[in-house]
Length: 236
Image (tube, rainbow, N blue to C red):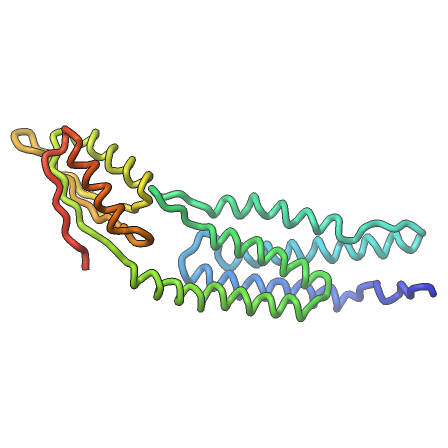
């Protein structure tokens, strides 16, 4: 039994519909990312989804074009490279700030949007639409749930470090922050000549074993000969 290949051809309205479907997916997901002040926003996600969709549509058109003359190209070969290629774009949204890494969720959303763009380009509207809804649930609801769970384990302290050498003490602080997975903010330095210099900062020990990591940091700081005293105050 021979397969009717006439149904594989794409009408102009179908191509436009698929492109607009992909743009809509990118706009919805990108708006959520831009609302939360992430590096890649609405237009970036729209472009990724649109480009992925265009590649998939082009693959199908090339397949139809060459199938008519007896060739049998693989319509998924070109679009498969999108999944790999978009990783380079996602890597540009990942930033390292001290001991923390930011942008992983946005990089993942770009990759997922590219996949949904391919689905839209293949005419799988149910898959593309359901995937968009699932992405919104992950980015919005589960972010709220994650914050609720982390809030109960939040452990933030204000540290006051008196030292004789600021550069050495700051280097030690940030070295410990990297080892113990602690993030610093609101760092202030008060240099002095006839008395110990003072470094004040806010340290976030939230997460697993927060109290243990705090005690480890205090022990390492007080053992240093350049630091004369360390005091802590829980940040409300």
